[in-house]
Amino acid sequence: MKGMQHKSTNIQMTQKYIRRYWSLYAMLVLPMLYFLVFRYIPMTYIQIAFKNYSIVKSPWEMPWAGAGGFEYFIRAFQNKDFLDALRNTLTLNLLDLIFGFPAPILLALILNELPYRGLKRLTQTVAYMPHFLSWVIIAGMALQLFAPTNGLLNIWLQKLGMQPIPFLNQSHYWVGTYVTLGIWQSVGWNTIIYLAAITSINPELYEAAAIDGANRLRRIWHVTLPGIRSTIVVLLILSLGRILGSDFDRPYALRNPLVKEVSDVMSIFIYNYGIRGLQFSLTTAVGLFQSVVSVSFLLFADYLAKKFGERGII
Image (cartoon, rainbow, N blue to C red; front, side, top):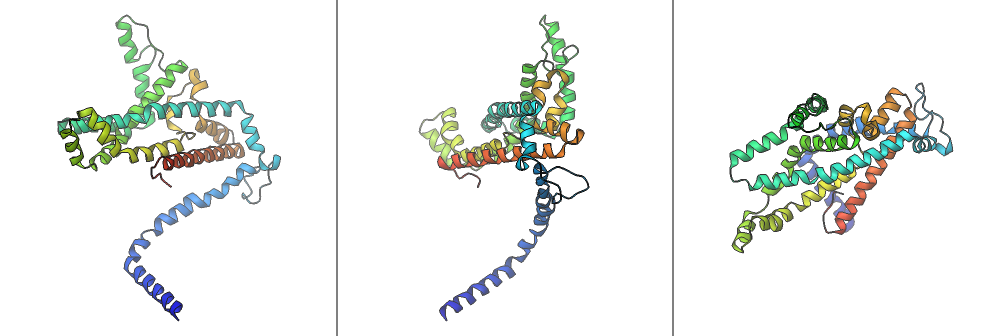
């Protein structure tokens, strides 16, 4: 009897809870439908990576590929263009992580220390405006600035008696230009996240540190950075999850035939072989490999964060 009464009480509490908060759950219907229709149902086409693609058949009816379904994965790793794209993707993303990840943290710390609010707001606005420019526009600006013969910067260098620098024509210069433009485009927007985290730090901590004799650098090191550490860890985990991912517009807009050996990344490989070459099974296999590796990096980074006492994201 007690068990039945307890069960009846739980049902009544559940019904009362649903009647009270039904509107909140109703608001979830559209997002859930969006993810179901546009995210989960299309995942059935992952099968193409293990099958011989046919435009007239559904993924369930396509015949399995050779080598136990792994034929196209084997083909990918025997393809020199894929190996070059894999190397370039890892290299460029690691450089973005090494140089690009700390940049918004440093900018946020600098802006937080500016005593004049007007200058702080102006600097922040100017810094995040490039985020709203497409990479086609940025590539056009880069061509006007860094072109080897008629670029504005190289014209100035020649007037100073110096040799022009092939920013866009030689591989190592192109990589530096690519990373620098990426930092310039994203640093201001990412700074907003860190500035928001800094505002949540208790001002009394700064006052206590100042009373104890800590100078400005000491207050940054012992108060500000520990206060935003959890935010830094979360964004670092997300960045590591994208270590094998690659945008299409940025490398495609900045590339040219002279730097093909360092500018062709995974997204360009998929575009060339999938959309232009119609090798859908091969490029689906490459995309699946890319996703699995990215998720593995994400989970490993989350595991390490929890090992060091952080909350992680999962």
